[in-house]
Length: 104
Image (cartoon, rainbow, N blue to C red; front, side, top):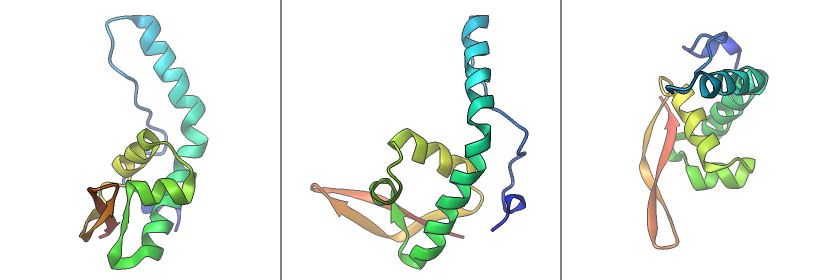
């Protein structure tokens, strides 16, 4: 997979809205700092989903494979939203059901 596999602009950054200029500045600086690993993580997520096939992976399964925090997984899924959809199966753990995600 290559970087052009994504629909997002690799140069775009997301800045959290705030009425305070200092908060927007902090958000922009954090986004710039995270930019180099953003694409790498998106590619890894897509590779994992490709390997999982039609079964897909839940956020818990992705977390177990990558060690990423839940909020990181959610942001990576958002970046890749044009390439993933809910899978037909669900993952059950701790008495709960979790959506699995697969490639389109």
